[in-house]
Image (cartoon, rainbow, N blue to C red; front, side, top):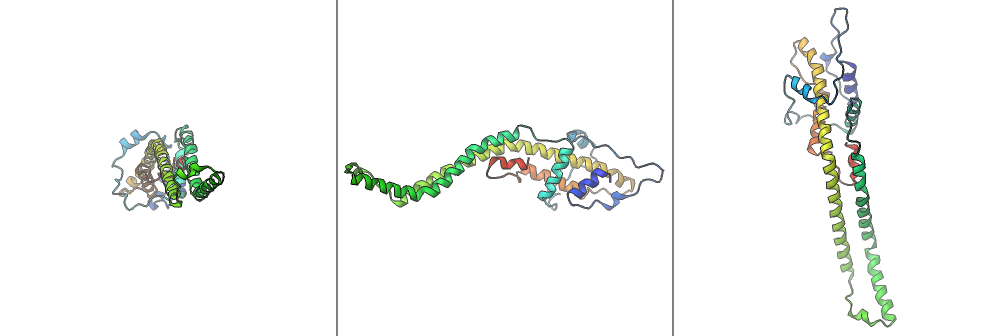
Length: 239
């Protein structure tokens, strides 16, 4: 196993396969180490793969990576040249303002519903004391009326927040899918790097645990498992 693969195994908290640590050939020459393949070279790696990548069903027994492992994979992706579009953070941030105003309105509505009711009664009393007879023709809301009004306002505000969150997801989804492709390309390269040692020793190939974990991460990215609910810029961490 070369330094890059060892670094990856250590970063995601996995132990490298034992038979990948075989000593160099006794030829007096160091074992050749292939240079990292650019992360964007997906098609050439996939074309050279002797067997197909594990299916979703085959990954059923592989756990999803934890946050520390996701962070480690993300660091390796950046190290190998992958990055999300530069404007995606700004696009998500633009949705934060209207979403935040709606959240503030929800809080104020809940907080002020009782105060509004008492202010309404105080206004009727003041106008009555001043001789304003028009108050007799007005329907005076009960406490329940004010509660129902607040509930309806909050329902509409929350519905609008969900619309904004859906907009954020539509922006983030294609980026997460592109990131999943990059993670799969990383797993392809790592498997291609490990395979010659298995062949040299006439051992049936089994993908290293960290490559399976990478593929599970790609699956999670594609499935929407990292979709956040709430502030639009919360999606930036997953991107």
